[in-house]
Image (cartoon, rainbow, N blue to C red; front, side, top):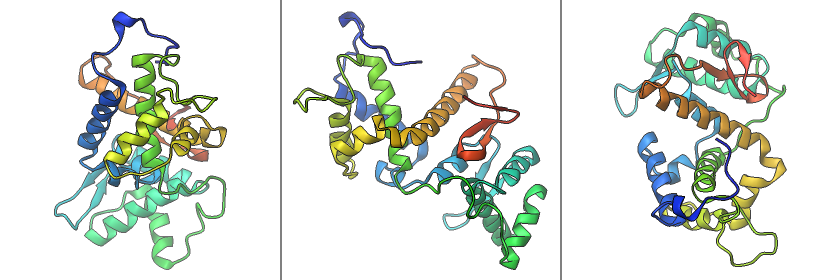
Length: 247
């Protein structure tokens, strides 16, 4: 759903934008079983691991972790690892954890696993794609909250920022304050950049794909769709539905 420019007064939420932003972050923390401060440190590959359908994280004990995934997903990740550093990081994580725990590595990933053991991995390094920093988790939550607030209050009533620097309430100001309440301190300018600056467009596109994936799972849960798409990281680190590009 595209954010609307304006929302009639009789359709506005009963709560304030600040209260709604807090509720959105509560949902994110509950869904990830992590605090916002922890979520903010998640890299893009780490989030992809947690949301990729069919990729199951298994933790028999607090200090133990391995992965289960179907060969179709393992093959797609292994193929992309040959040119995409983010996919390579995911495959490396799976190979290392499963080998350490004595759990079979998916067959399509075994050649990469063998290269890692021998210390000669040549895939996914020095090629196209950008290794994500520690901000992607924060950008993802900020983007999800911003879209929700824009839909709830309208972009005219609640813009991301104001060009004249006025004291008018904006999404960037609200998120700055709400994030700070949870121990994540970023400037208003930082939020404005994440949400509107062209140099962050790729991260917004990636966040939007993850948001669509999560929404699709909710629709499946409530029986509104029968077969959700099967998504995987593709060239350039964007999310693909296996078999076709997601635009």
